[in-house]
Every structure is written in structure tokens, then in C-alpha cells.
Length: 180
Image 1: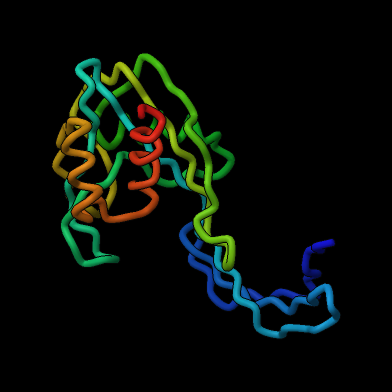
Image 2: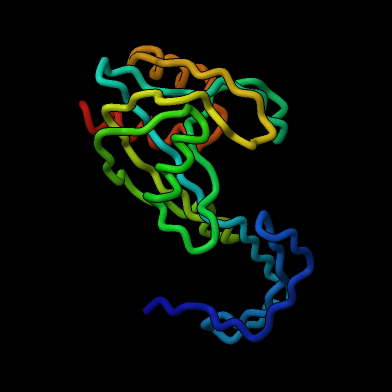
């Protein structure tokens, strides 16, 4: 029978709230071994939205992402603030990033971004009937150009590595797989 590890101690070694916290834990394995330096990283939960207009086109943001030092495609989305419910965060992020709202919302899935070190949970939503109501008003560091992609253009962007993050590629792939 598989058993969870037991946390014997935890020390935060770096914290920049609400963005990241790095801790070192002392853990006891089920066989009795003790590991004194198991790292745990928390970055908070995120939402990513597959935002679809009535013509079937999906919103993507073309932007420079400094972490990978590339220009590429991302989905509207961002951090879940404090005690905010993921759907509320998704609606807020869609309005901030593309100035839009949606007629219908569906939760696609939620995934832990790293089961080894912790990180965060990404919550994926499919918003349909998306209409731009106002200009984007995001306080993000990244400049963004909104592009509306067809399913064919999404497949090409995924195949060519133009979607920069697994957290953005996964909900697009899930949508395409569900339609097959």
C-alpha cells in the first residue's frame, strides 16, 4: 500500500507574496528514511480561458514572455487572487485582457503544474459567445496583441511551438481532442 510522506519540518527560504514562496522541508518516507532538503515551491493558482466567439475563432494573445525570452501565443488568463473562486477570476481576466465577456462558461479541468515540487493549480475554462465590450485594461507587464485563431491555426501554432506554455497549450489541446 502506498503511503504519503510525513512532513517533519518546513522552513521558508524565499517569499515574494503573492507570487512565489520557496520552502525546504524535512520529510520522512514510508520506509523510514528522512530527507532533510526537499524543496517545495508555491506560486498560487491560475486560470486560462479558451475564449471563443460565435464564429468559432479563439482569442490568443501574441506577446513577449520574458521567462522564455520569446514572442509567442498565450491564452487570456492569470492569477486567482486571494480567496477568489476560479470562475470569478476567469471572468475578471477575460475582461481585463481582451475587454470581453462570454454568454456561457464551462470548466474544462484543473491540473497541478508540478506534482513533484508543488507550484500551482491551473484551472481551464471554455468561454463561448465571447464579445469584446471594451478596450483591454490589463496591468500585466507584457504588451499583448489580440489575435483570433481558427482551429486550423491553433493546430499549426501547437505543432510549431508558437504556444509558449504547457498551461496554454493544454486547454487548447483538450478542446481539439474533445471535438474529434
